[in-house]
Structures are given as C-alpha cells and as structure tokens.
Length: 72
Length: 72
DNA sequence: ATTTTATGCTAACTATAGTCTGTTGATTTA
DNA sequence: TAAATCAACAGACTATAGTTAGCATAAAAT
Image 1 (tube, chains in turn yellow, purple, orange, red):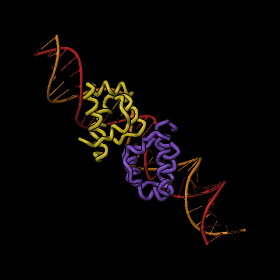
Image 2 (cartoon, each protein chain N blue to C red):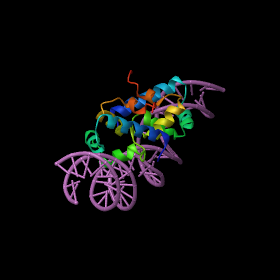
Image 3 (cartoon, each protein chain N blue to C red):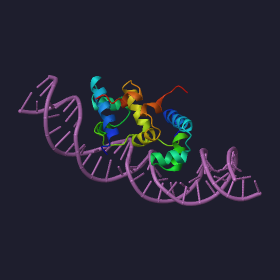
Image 4 (cartoon, each protein chain N blue to C red):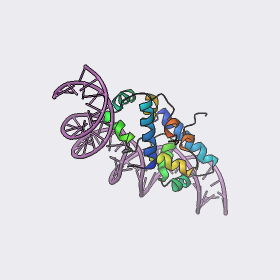
C-alpha cells in the first residue's frame, strides 16, 4: 500500500507503542491481533479496518483520534 | 456488523452529510465510492478501511478525527 | 396522478484485509 | 558463543471489505 494516511497511522502506532515500552508482540496480545500484523500496520503495508483501529487504540489506552495526530 | 464503533462512525457521516445538504449519491461522487456503499457505512453494515475513511472525510471537508466525535 | 429523487435492502462477485507459519538478521543478555 | 528477544519479510490461506446491478418503498416535485 504505502498511502500517506497509512504511513501516518503506522508511525503513530509505533511511536506510542515504543513510548509505552511494548514490543510488537506484546501489543498484539493486548489488541488480540497477530504478531506480524502489527508490524505490517506500522510499515503501512495493510489498509486497516475501523474495528482493528479501535482494538489498537484500546490496547494503547488512547483515543482513536490520537492515532491521527500529524505533528511528526 | 453493527459494532458500536461502526455505528458511531456511520451516525457521524450521516449527520455531517445532511448538515451539508448532500444526498448519499452526491457524497458518493465526491468520495469516489459507490452509492449503496455510503448507505451501508451509515447503517454500520460494513467495517470500513482507513483509506475510505479518509476519502469520506475529504469529501465532507473535515478532519478524520471529526468522524469520531461521540457527543450525539 | 405520475415522474423524479432519495434511501433501504438483497445477492453475487472480486479484491484485498487479516491470519498464520516459518525464515532471516540484528541486538541483547548470560 | 550461545541463547533469547525483537522485528522484517515472504508465502499461502481464509474471511470479509468493497463493487455493482437490480428491485422496493416513500416522499417531493411537476
């Protein structure tokens, strides 16, 4: 994929995940998603659906809106 | 589907679309999506992907974040 | 009254999201 | 130098998102 919106989203997931000292695998457990899938999202290789967007936001204890911040 | 997050999203799309006096069909042109698909999204029958979320936000001239407001 | 506009709904199809296994390489830890 | 942790990546599979045509209903417009 590599569309800009997916890149923005993926960067935000990675940034917040690392801030919380979580590995991709740990986040995947919390979000009930597969290990490799988190990596694909962070690399903007998949066009994520809304239900999974929410799962990730919940796993990171943030609002969905926070995953669309575009300051960096 | 009918998951809560899809219901919230659909309600917001409909609300803003009507505020702007657009029919589903008119919005579908602007967003480059099919007529019936907009209806399905508003009725929370499909789990929309991020790329299409952005298309709808752009067609409505709003930010993606605005589609996740939960006041009404 | 009938034509037009708007939406709901179904069903079938095709494109792709999402799952899962396994391999590789880098880094860290013992 | 192992052993363990982490992430990138590939490939194959299954589930479902997204497209499209068509029919039904209701309301507004002519």
